[in-house]
Length: 452
Image (cartoon, rainbow, N blue to C red; front, side, top):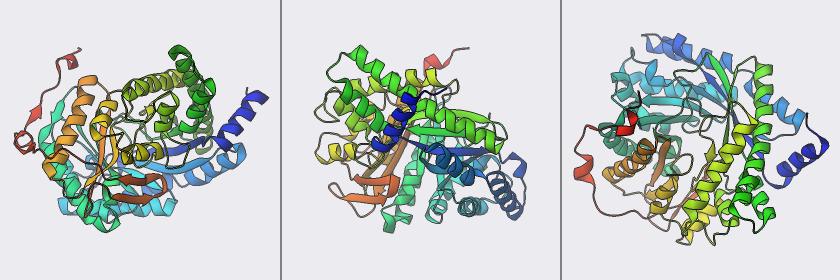
């Protein structure tokens, strides 16, 4: 039971500190949609998504109204499309993205994830066809998100696919150049991708999941920042306890919404993802949390240590509040979606090298980073390889969502609006990794992958 103090506290956090349910995401299996006829496959996919998720938005809105908890996004994730499309011609692959987009529009959801492939060890013909079609798919759809898993601690890094993705990202940027290359904002590559992530652009319905599932993503950077500020000049143990207690409260709210959505929709409850996902709104920033810990500016010396403390305390608090914490759960550091990160980049305090160091201790990776539009594909691939190696070596999820802003250079800004925000174009090292990326093959799995 919730006492009166807890209820009033939650109301205050929602009203004053930007606490919200960032997303309620329904995962849907598409295995029973398989057909060797491309038109039949598209029809099956559309019917399965729209019939299964037809009550998602209405139910989320009812819970929002009844409990007074803002639910910002309603989303769907599906079985990785490359896994159900092996029997259709490669040139028809992008039709499935258009089908997903149509289904998302019918449902009224903001994003649909799962235009995806898992190629950490090798690529099937369908996976290669899907990857080749990504630029077309993301240029011609509004709500479809795409992800590719390129590496894992067990398999190592598929450098052939890493090299390919550099070209795919450039082509996606070129095809959406008139919209600040927004296609790349809907495309993410991973190491150790989770099967139950409710957040876009990386959400898909994993191979070990059931027929349907409800996953909820909770976000509360503003709440954590306010709690740290109120705690004042305490020692690190007290600081960690403050974050843990706050994370516990946030996760309990997510557990409530997830359980209610599951019950009302008749869909099993999967996980609560407690990720401190920022927004461009002032006061809803992970960078400001770190600065409230005592840093003059996010990106200065000490930032990685502060982020490590934050990420660990958030997870410890979350697992006490729910038996099913999953997804990515921790702290996100997307540049364009965090007003504090944007300011840190603009003032020169935060570089891509520092961001890479920070990803060793946070939940995801190099996220929503704009780079010069003339960045060669081999440099994009090398950025990916660097980041994925951190995930492989540390047995954690890492990711890259990088945006070569066509026609723009360092000092310019790309503007996406909404939760995607604005991003200052960041400088990169000019030295070529082409010979390294061109070697091909796989970077072997690390020795600690042999745990059997």
